[in-house]
Image (cartoon, rainbow, N blue to C red; front, side):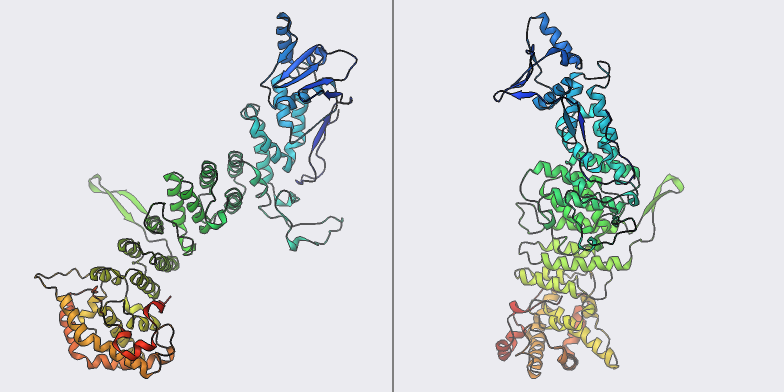
Length: 640
């Protein structure tokens, strides 16, 4: 009997399923009730084979001529004068035994990708080898597998799917390994030799319809390098792992294509993964999938997008993956953190935590980001000691700036959490404090949000959080917002006003006054000064300034805003850009007129920091008319 052969082009195409017909006699197997099978024949049956609950009334000669196992069982039964043979553990049960029995009778049977593995295992169990009879079932199936099934892309995948129920027997027969290698070889073939079939889930794209035919009348298609990706998503995770590992070992497919395959599998196999979460279900199964994908990821940076890695991290947390899996993801995310967005890194805190977001894991990611900025080499020096030598950083300024802006935006989001500890906010902000950025508007917005959502923090805590910000790097809009921001400590407001005075003077070409030492010190990272005594001079300064100078300063500012018609129309509570220069000029003059206050500040603030003291007097309360026309502080918006 001739077997189906793959002829012609070596291109891998899926037209229809391969099959093989064996035998030529009519199928005379019949059913009597639910549990009885027999062969319609003039000869009475002389053997009963029980397979589970099904009894087969058959004839010894056809079975004994092709099955060594049945020869043994029937011989033993004859010695014990038994007419019934029990084979309860045959692979595939009664269905595969019936196929094997029909083959013994020479009846027509059809094998395809769905039933060939189970039949092959049953034939092995029954001992239907060449040593019993030439052209036996095991041989014919092996020829069918190698000549047809393993050469067909679709049939190989189906075969691999169906083999799972036959484990571990199919592994002993090497069928799975041959099938895996066959699939991997096809996935790595040059795309010029692939006729891309639209099997399973991938549909034609609109632009691929109506492609002109070539001279031979055949439609030509551009085959993408990842044409095989979605078809493999049909495989269970252990078989999928085997195939992808085999593909990677051949070093033919690029890391980007491997990454695309892993992305497709995650989106298919993890429910709701696209939304950064996983629906309730078989948690242990989903955990295996997540961990498998993580360890299959190519090591090279950029193989998958940072957003995908962050989704994997969220999934790993949800399914309670091990620490190694999460640490590996944190490391990979840190290598390309500049690609992330704020929504990507908003990772929910574990159940039971008081806070909304897991800030510590973001801190770990940022720390990992900076670890690639240097490389420490160990060299032997005199005395046998070891010394670390730091190489120049490899991070670009653009990457650092993008991460700084990312964290500023992240801080603004987590600041809305009323249970967020100040230490979490400050520690994360300090991680990126070394990154020089042209503007601190984003950081100011985050600080303002935190102050708004945490009105009960102490003066010292306000001082600590405001110290993160460089007032000289606030834009004009941010300065104007800060000047009227009643949540900021008053000494920070004065600092903003003074630096805006300097900027205005510089832009107008007038002489720039020297910055008082006290105001300079407000902007330092740490002044490290302390004084003895029961009274804190900084608190004294705040009290004097609040009572005598800063209250008048804010009243004057409110009056200036009213005089320019700002209060009635500005919904955001900020001075309109068209009035900026006028107001700033008047504030400049106001500051110059407050010489006694500046003198007091310079003399007492030399050892000071950004004080956490705030004032009960705000712009809106300083002037009764302003209180009517200016929106409440809850309606004001931070500068983004």
